[in-house]
Image (cartoon, rainbow, N blue to C red):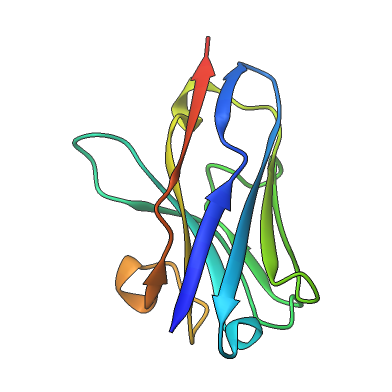
Length: 122
């Protein structure tokens, strides 16, 4: 069992930056791929970015490439999502997820955090 706790969300103006954190606990949490998804009311949860357990493989949604950077610090059991050049379309609840494969689909991840709200004002 893995528990995930997100932090770092908030309100930011368009063009600004935020860094989200996801702290994991539980057995073998460092072995899991970690990912970020986001969701707005009325829409499905969508993939944002993912990173392998070792941190050497990353993936991004086209909409965030060049603006977001995912990383992890296994010594701290924490994954990060640095978000720059934010715009109103980045608004949503951001969820951290952990799974045994590096994928872009919700069904590929076994563990989820409670989410943290990101609001970008234009």
